[in-house]
Image (cartoon, rainbow, N blue to C red; front, side, top):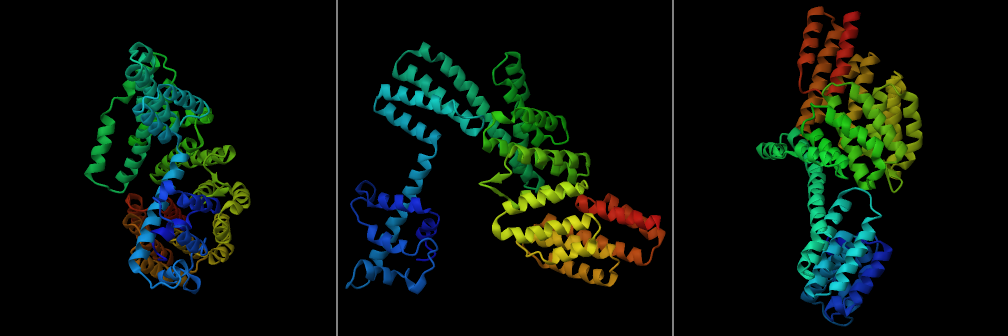
Length: 489
């Protein structure tokens, strides 16, 4: 019972939703005349944690409460669980439909059409027009515009038999269909590119080639030539698609970035967040390829994101991943004072359970950049690991600190333990594992050269590093800096 889908679903309900669910279960329209309320009320006594205190969630104990004096019937109990679980799914569907204007409109228009309620159909179209007028550009806007115009065209053609009245609506239906295709392609292209980077195989490559084969540029040029009202937006989504598929051609990125920064207010919050994430991810990709100019661009995007409150904080909370990304990017540019202010302002916006450890990690990074390695190590020792990525980041910083503190003996031991940790960990993704193992192997050779500085060996190590294609860019950069220091000495 404790691990049942029913209990897991009930755990997700808020207090208000639980009250609504009780009414839902009590309604004869939904429960087919069966009374499941006593069962639900017994379960509710364990809300919200459903921790099974005193075996209160044991089927036998619940059965005794509902049917005192009767022998336990496993089949009856199983049927109640099964039926209440179905009602819970129906309830979630009811909530989802209530909050999804697009799907609600599609269903109600279809139902009204079947019943030939012509006046009501037109009222629904007018309601939808009013709702859309308050939306900004995004997936919901373009899709709902397509649905509304298509419904209007169908109303005049099929219902009223006045085809000429629906011509304008049919034209707009086509236009918004094309816009929808571009919006969704821009999302799919980003996903395809990520799959491609992780060696997803021929299927992904074929899908990318298929998208590239579409003559989207001609579509945009025709829209511009005809002064279409949405031509600039079409151009924006074209750049967004090509930015993902042709990352070497930077003009797509810069045109996309320029339009967004000048017109971000025309997009809804969800679309703003998706676009700013796309821009940031492109910068990360280019930086990992060794293009340092995108470090500064990424930093400016982060500042814009925070200033305009675009996808930075959701319900007053900043995500750990974004917090880390902004922090490390700023420090890579030496923006120490800005980073200190960022940490003070945004650490309290992390989840409460993350704040202490992320604060320690942040100051570990800051002290590291300031070359206060002892203070950095003290902060890093206070980090309570939340996930594997934290452990890997701390291991890199710790090893670098030991190197600069000339703690040779400890570093040799730390390199060995790190290689065992990475090599034996089955959770680490293969590309990441290979890159981190490379770092510690190169660090071991660097440390040997530092102890016994021979010009030929140092030169050979530098050449091996320079041509390596597996190391992450920031790791390679640090190692090369340390090799150059050996040459100077």
